[in-house]
Image (cartoon, rainbow, N blue to C red; front, side):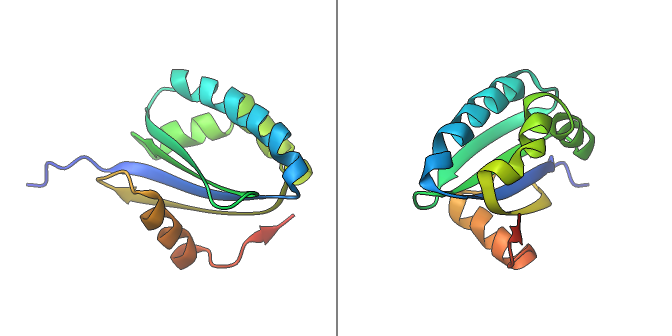
Length: 120
């Protein structure tokens, strides 16, 4: 009998249009983090820079339902409406996993699952 707990892990990459968009992006991140702190099913979150204009997010959720409820509401939903203003391109993947990946493993997942970014 498998007693390990699997989480829904979301990994994203946001490529900013320019360094000048970083202030807008960081304001969005601050609002989204506040939303995450109160989100049911949220387990862990990390934001990792990958150069000056590329950022990766990693989040762990108790379930797909919890993750999707978060994504479609509040500050996150608003940021998704504005994504073309801030981002030149994005990538994302979701996996079920027992452990929170480090940034190297998360980027490997992105490269395996979505090697070509979606350009806005």
